[in-house]
Each structure stands twice: as structure tokens, then as C-alpha cells.
Image (cartoon, rainbow, N blue to C red; front, side, top):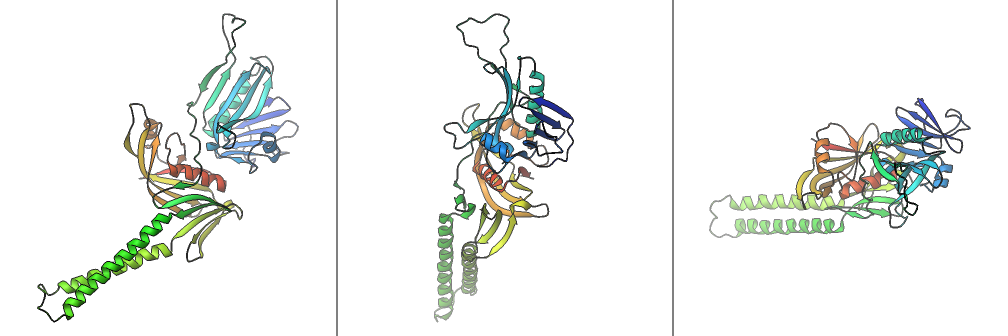
Length: 391
């Protein structure tokens, strides 16, 4: 956790905690130690949330000490009448938590009358949601001019603040399959591998080219050596031999593509990503996790394919590439070709396509198997994930 940004505001909270808010950082610290004298419990930047091992154990968070923005459904701040407190927390990804893919992770609380700490709680929540670029929900205390009936339960009002209320779709589980590739789990992590049916089709194509080449050789040589009447035009047998040569080259090229095909291993044990030749052996390149600055998902502009109903999600088609960036090089992971998906917010996506530069991946905007695979890969590497449109 880094401490390079000086805080501009400090908000005290219950249990001797404090929140420091700066232009590009949000920290939760133990009030008995300053941000200089000790590491914060939680530190948030635009890239994600880092936290201490003690906080991870207390909140049952992943022990890696890191949550990416896509691991967070929303920031929630609200009044709890049963404890007479304001509470601030996150809805975080929990694939094994049961029917719901999200669960509550508390950050801070403020005890007192409902109006005592509302301003501080909202300020901390708004700064957190803005920094992570995640939706913010406020569960406000009920305020009614008329007294409620004694038998009627009080239901707090829920209002969105500063951001849309849409929750990101749950992350798809592996394996994920594409036209030529599969993204699978392995004993040591994750792997991009050529699909077995692609290998079979490529081998059959190679054999087909070879058979056709032999046929043209047989016809061409047979015509030239048969001693029968000369073929008109005379160059036709030579054209057949030239076609045979081209087919033979295509057969060798296709066979070599199978033999020299690579797979990309995300090795969580050795903490590196490497590309190796699956059949021939040998490593083409390797990048340690610590050198990965970010995972880049680049694609062509999504092309609308129509939608079901007037307000249904838009079906989209795009070509997708995945790269790793280490600050000096872009390492090609996989070229997936055309990938189909849907966009729940097509009008917003179409407007964002006009904006230059990289942006965060939001599955509610573009929901394709490629985007889910990119999220899995970024989580495994522990690096930010960025999305770019190829012009």
C-alpha cells in the first residue's frame, strides 16, 4: 500500500477508526496510528481496493489483499434503526456465498441520532464511489410528516446517488469457449488453449491440401509423359503442377500451425504468465505478475445485431484481442476473432465509443465471453483491466 498522496480531509468514525480522503485516494485507518506511522486497514485508488491481512480475516475477503473495481457491485451507506448507526460498506463479489453472487463488507459506522453523522457518512461514501467509479446507494432513514401506525413496519427508502443503480452481471465460471480457443482452469492456474476441434479441422485441412496436390501432380505428370496427343493449350499441365506446388505449400503451412501452436499459461504458483509451444515445447515469452502494469482488452467497435423487444438488450458483434502491458511492451495473449455478446446499455455504450482513450470494463455495458475471460485473467494476475477500441 502506498502513501504518496496527502489527505485533504479526515472523517472520524466509530471504534477508533478514521477515514482519510484525498484527490486520488481513500483510506481507512486505525485512529491510534497516523497514516505516516502505520499501514492503513484499507486503501482505495482508481485501480482498486487493497487491504491488510487483519482486515481480510475480519471481513472474510480474499487473502490476496486486493479487490478490482469489477469485484464490487456498489458502495452502500445507510441508516440502521436497530443499531441507531450509519453504516458504510461494499457489496463485493462472493461466487461461493450461495444464491446471491454478492455479499456485504462493512467499512465504517457512526453511532448516534440519525441526523448526527449523516453528512460525514455521505461524504465518505460519495468519495469512495467516485474514486472506484461504482454505483452508490443510500438507505436513508424514514422521514414522514405523519406518524406511522403502530402495526405498520417501517421500510427505509432506497435512493441512488451520483451513479446508476444497475448491478454488474455475475462473472461467468470457466471454462469459456471461443471459435478457436478455450480459456480453462488448470492445476497451476489458468490457460488459453487451442480447441481440440480446431486442431482436428486444421489437420484434416492439411491432409486435404496434400491429397489435392498429389492429384494435380498425377494429372500434370501423366499428361506430359503419356505420349498421347498434346494437350491444348500446351501450358495446361504446367499450370496443374504449379497449383500442386501451391497446395503442397498450404498443406505444410497448415500442419506447421498445428505443430507450432502456442498456449498461454497464467501460472499462479510461479506468479508468471508465459506462452509456450504446446507440442514442440519451449517458452516463447514470459512475464512475471509483478511486471504486469495492466491487462488490455482491445476490440473493434461493437456492431449492433438487433434486439428482442423494444427495450431488450442489444446483441453486438466485435473482434477481440488480449494483451499484457509491462510498461515497455505489449505481449500478445490471444486473438479471439469475432465474439458475440449483448449490451444492456447500448445507448450509453454508443455515446462512450466517441470518447478517445482507454476505459474500465463494465459487463453491464458489454457482456461477452471475452470480457468475462479478461476479468478472470486480470484477477488472477492481480492487475488492472482496461478496455480500448481499435479505430
